[in-house]
Length: 223
Image (tube, rainbow, N blue to C red; front, side, top):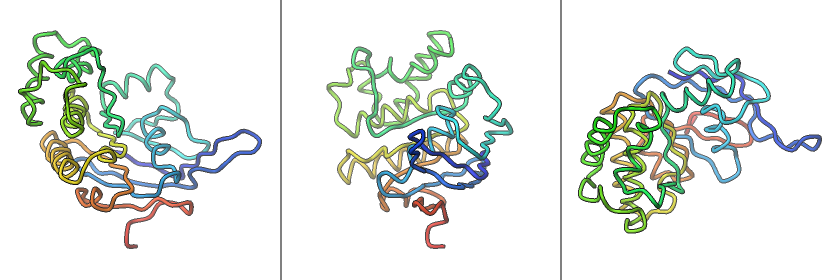
C-alpha cells in the first residue's frame, strides 16, 4: 500500500534544519501502524509528505503503486481527496455545519449525490456511536464526541489510507481509549491501512506494529 525509501526533509533555506533523515517504511494493505516520537522529531512532517502536502528533499513515496514525486498539485489534491482520510488532534470540525454535514463534507466535495452522501454520513455516525448527535453543532460536543465525528468524517468516503496525527492528545484517558478502539475497529472494518503518529505509548498499543522516530531515524520499536 505504501512504500517509502530514503526520505529526507529540511527546512530553513541556507541555515537549514534537518527534520527527517533517510526514512524508509513499508505499510501493507489493511495494516495499522503507530509511529511514536517526542514533539519536534518530524512526525507531522512525515504525515504531510505522505499526503503530498509537502515534497521531500530526497527519497521517494509510492502510494498504492503511484509515485507521488512526479505528480503536480492538482493530481496530489485529487489523490488526497479520493484515497486518503485524516484525523487530527485539533479535530477541525466546521462550526457552522451540523455533525452530519461535517461528516458528509468529503462526499459533497467529491460530488456524491446528496441523498446518498447523507445516508452514508448517518451510517458512519451510527458506527461511531453518535448517531443521536447528527443534527447538533460541534460547539455542543465533548472532546471525545468531536473526535468520534472527525473519525467518521475521515472514513465516510472509504479511503485506502488513514493518517491520524495525535488524535487523542487533548482527551482524557477514558475518551482516548474509546476513540482509539473506534479508530482501529473502523479502519479494520473498511479494509483501510492506517498510520497513527503519537507520543503516547498507550495510544500506540492500538496498532499492529510500532515504530520509533528520533533524530537518528525510524526504527521498529524495541529493535
